[in-house]
Image 1 (cartoon, rainbow, N blue to C red):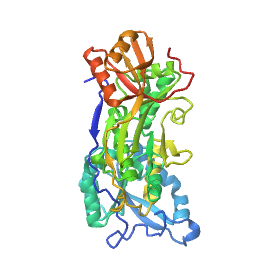
Image 2: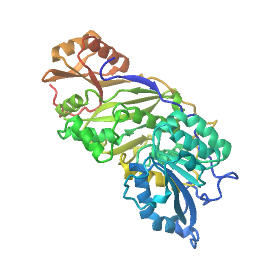
Image 3: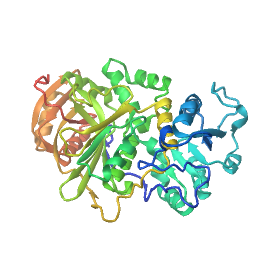
Image 4: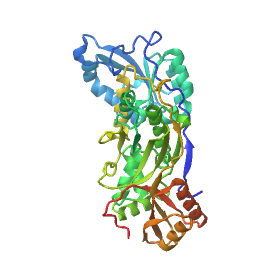
Length: 464
């Protein structure tokens, strides 16, 4: 395999992951306000003599969970005034009872006993642990007794969405994952509002704040190790951020987006995924030579014949484009509905505070609409991308040899350049299949090829 491993992966299952509306089997403590958007009405619409108390159990009190604790404490008066509800944090599951957290939290609420946490009675459980276990056990136990579960955990939903959805349906529970995509950018709620009126032509965006932060620092002269250290210091990256840099995190989010926008079950969505590393520093360097920027872009696009193609890959964009101006940990998603310009949402997509804000938004939502488009809706099929694009191909090779290799596999090249021992060329319009042949030939030469889609075509490009 090439060092920049390129894969086609079907995303793990999120089958039948609908959200049950509060009904006869719902907890009596849950919000019961009526609203056409599924959000509790403002203070002017209801009498707020005594705010309703909602008992909340929190699993995980790290960067995200701790951020939510602070937010619930600081926002309590505004939440009570606007929504007529008071969130009472009644139990918090942690790994280390003795860790200093500097949070407005009574230490008597903490437990490291999973069984005791699961036995505790609450109206809502917020899962902020991450990963598969014990997150799956917690979510399954809560849903089985009819308790609403809120999570921003893409891995949990990707791996166990089908079984958790079945439990939610069976027991009249709610399961919300709006915080799983976009951080503070309201991607899921925006798509849910739009999908009943129109099917998008495409949804594309920067969905991983950690990778975008790292790229932004590289553009400013940092090393990859230095950029990663800075991201970890700010709480924007885990110790192991492989999922951020190889595109798996963005692909999981894209699968959720494609499900809501096009009704394609995430397990049925085939994603062309091209990691950023190794080779990211070289891509950034050559993008700079062309007067452009590198961004990890996730995209699902509607094709003729009710088909949809999906990809997560490095894309070279113009610095003045909307994605080129999206820097640091910002996320940005653009929804093309065929209007004069795309509808866009943006906001910080990494870090404790943005994710905590998104979790609070899900906590305030009464009953989000189901994700199922319905039996009468158009059924879309996930297919490989048949379109042609321009590509930037870099390798540890001199420019003439790189161009000769490109020509030998039938690819034309528009520009080429070199920087030390590395060379780069920009191809003419070509299919992914054709470019993959070039990468295969460069693999045989052991010259560490890297590839990115090339979307900028300004006259100021510097390659000669």
